[in-house]
Image (cartoon, rainbow, N blue to C red; front, side, top):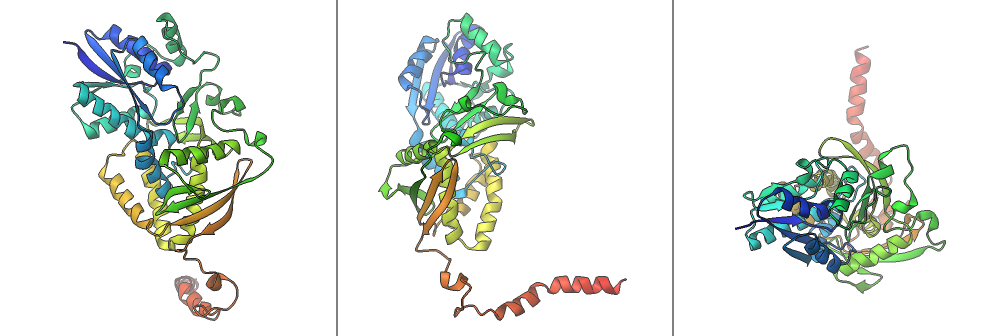
Length: 401
């Protein structure tokens, strides 16, 4: 009886050559390709056919984009997680959902193996395998990039050509691209040379800010307990909302970063990330939080967001610590309800209004004029107490001289 292996399949270069490679190197094996559609714009029927034509005995192409949005993307927005303060974790947020689907199919098919096409230098191998370990540690993992003699993407293209497998990657345009509803990441090729300015042809989603419209555009985002619900007054389903805001961001060249990051596996890596809608939603959420959360809570939330981002980046979604942090974040979002108006223009976002009934900001108190709750004279006593430790230290220092 053939051994079944579930393959995380995208139809790209790496996963396309894995199917014939598995059949060449493992006796009596049945490859079941699984493509989790998390909003990438590939034609899923083409991906399905390609998997079968490449030698898979069966293929699953399942739309899991709504689970992607409601489970991980909305959590990321509420926490405002950014790895190393910049990266909106587009690839990282999708991996727990995709890996969960792989385990589900493995259980359904009675497969004892899961295979992925992640390179031995990347983060994704850890993310996939950490999720598999958390959900079913009995499943064994096959990672071809850690086994085979293929050493580069150029070698992989040669292998594909030798086996008559159609791939879009070429040796001239060797970029490695990961796309989903939240973002597009582009790595490899001339991007790897730090001396190079990345080219416009890298962009898969966004217009270059220089080429964006000369006329600004306004957008208003409504949040309910930290979760985006409406765009310009229109209530939208989760996936449609992300698509709507994405279209606005793309049009105005918003959300492109050229990042040199520290990978989990110990090396630095450069990539160009496009997260148009996410950048807008983060900015709107940030503005609303600034008006509705008290200082101590907000500052502590910002502190743990750093740890939260590292957990997601490292593939540790299914952990108690991640769940505990999210529980804290959810409490902080109780009053984060209201709308934020933003002005979009050539890659920039400008705040154009915050509308929240729960706002802690009070113009009467915060203005320079007089108010019942605050007297300018009160500041003198406060400053005396606040600076007391400084005065004591200075006095002791002077006495010792």
